[in-house]
Length: 224
Image (cartoon, rainbow, N blue to C red; front, side, top):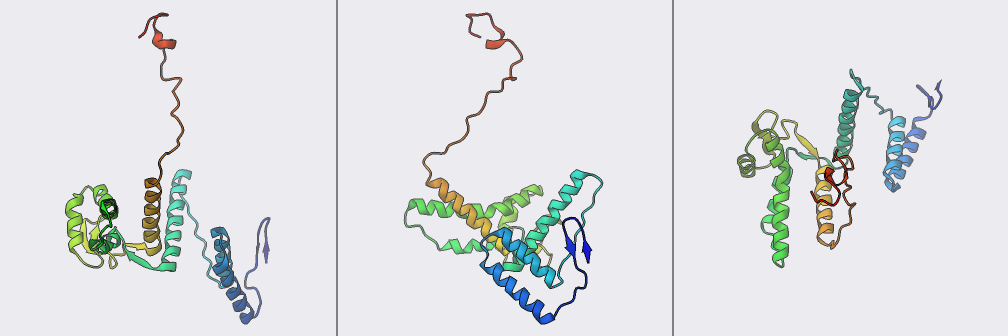
């Protein structure tokens, strides 16, 4: 037993396996009933500790800035892994969204406004792949058309500049992340469309923008 200022660690503690298993199942039930993400995370940590599935990742670097960047990457990877465990994975690199475009092919709006909305959605779904290709310095239109012509997990690997099977090359996106990104974007767009007025802070004048005298440095009574 290791007792510190804020924590107590029990190594190789005793206990009946059946009791521990029952406790784990009880906590998992609490996870399903929890409404707070914070509570769910803490309960999941408890399950991991009881089942012996705890890992400690130490991130080191030469400078604090580099360390924070590496830590952020590790946290992103951790969250992505958890999301993948929940709902699985889809081909990355924007390929999954491109394949989803087929669902819009036969979709027709009840009026002109809905039809325009469908076209906007179709264009928006292409943007992740377009941005990836443009950041790699390639022609987005050419790459996009070639990916559209493919099937399944066929896509573009921006790191190598080659086409191939995204799943085989390990380029994956958590299904949950891809789904929520599309749902949240559509939700925000719908909110903006039904908004008549938006309120924002007025820009503040920079008092130090002019180094001269008040009024532009001119003589009194004269407009500059």
